[in-house]
Length: 280
Image (cartoon, rainbow, N blue to C red):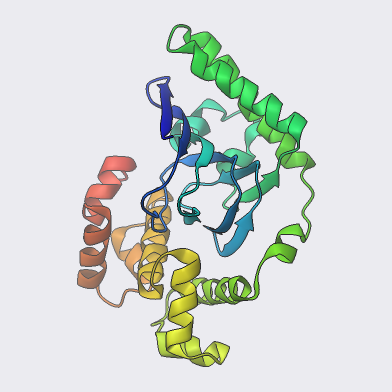
């Protein structure tokens, strides 16, 4: 059974989606110019989140910051149920500018995974159902319930203890892919070649390509491009010029950066800046 409930609210500044479906395609790694709060009601054997691949338990809450690369691999022929809240980063920053309580949602660049117990899950999902039930009838109630949801998640974040539970569930090849991702991110401004990565980890290029594709649903070359384009978007948000972003993301020429950005984003770097940030 495929079921999707999508509800946008408050001038489309935030959106709540419930989906329960049998996936027919696997999404490649991607990012959003928005914050995502993701509740997976179904366990997954493999996800890419930031610079880690890992399994995901049933009833997991994920806080995914803007520009955080992520990809979820669903099991074939199995229903996959989840709630997704997407929030405009710019709107939320302005809305809570003087409220330090919710600063995690706008300040952090690190994703978090929290396994919900039955009580936490029921509390959170009940408020999300209340939000969907508003159906644009009462803007004040929408805003009130929306911030109730943020308050619940905020409480979960600050009572969440960092531990090695995830590390214990990560497989050997997932650990290797995590190390490769960290190596790529640390050398993003350099000319990263598959042969160099293979030498670094004492593996063959074919083996590295195979396990990386298995756990991220993309090739290493595509992942490097995505990381560089994502970093450029972050720099544009901070006010960097196109030339500064080109150098900071490891492109030796402006032309190469320009072509790659336009091919992957659908607009030129300057068009992207004007569309989202309008920096002078």
